[in-house]
Length: 94
Image (cartoon, rainbow, N blue to C red):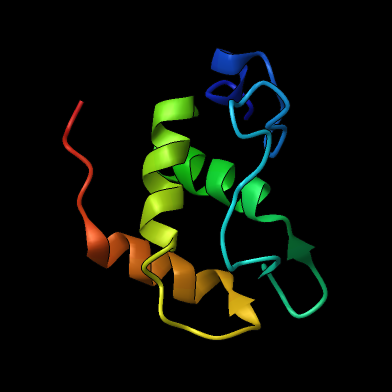
């Protein structure tokens, strides 16, 4: 399941090798469920992986920039962010 994260030799949410070291933005936590919250870094990596996109610095930056345009308020729910990102763009076919 971590095949795409291994492109960077990291697990999902590990941004230690990223130039910024962490997501920078207004979203501090993502509610994945009623009992589980994710870091924005983990959410971004999970979003990329769930859309069969490689987890790379470039793709992380693209998703981070798109999240900066999200106009919702906390608590930030995963399904709302997914819907926003899915409507923001369509991934090109491989």
